[in-house]
Image 1: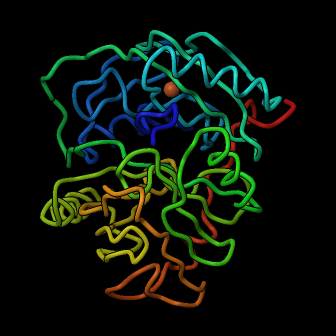
Image 2: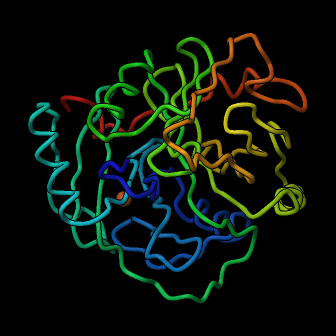
Image 3: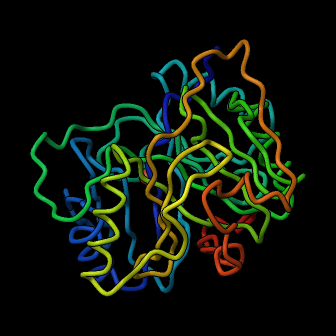
Length: 297
Ligand SMILES: [Fe+2]
């Protein structure tokens, strides 16, 4: 079973101080700045052209979420499917550097999504310092009724439900064996956090040391989620957006037999098997949608 999406690729975030955000990303988060053009910094954790975009703007906001399609044919099929569903297509050409083909559309809760193929290679040499992730993991998006975007991802993008906490509080969806490439959380439309995968728990401790040396600290974790069973930590970036680092995420290798887990909202095990549940500041925190990503703008 395989839908049009191969993997989650990056987030594009509007930041109020581009130099400060890039300095932090390349000092703490292990990123390398590949290029900076017209107020947009293209950052990579490894060898692809970018796995994070920082866009200079008036405040901290979510610009877009990007996914890679399997190939051109998958992208064309998705475009046709979006038209059938009368989804608002914003662009059918690359709106950023480093990608060959691209489609941008607006989801049912106002999030701007980008699906692309053909990302350029930026070379194997990593020159950033800090705690280098292994790959981009997922965004966790916020929406007033998470079932709306959840149904859209299931029906149109062919994601599968992996686990949920609630009902209606949190859900986790996948497009490949990773337990979740997309998280959904109840809240005003926006982004709760974005996540990077690292090799193991030792890298999470390295991140704690690096944050401390740079005047920051974890806001939750280290712990182990029940949903997804991954080890986790969370901290703020300089723009006030929450960043998760995780390791040991559950892999769904047998689609035929996997049954989604369900936890009640007041059952702490869904959130953290090791310690306290999610802190209130993280439940309330949301990076809002950028102005241009709003429906009808
Ligand atoms: Fe992008």
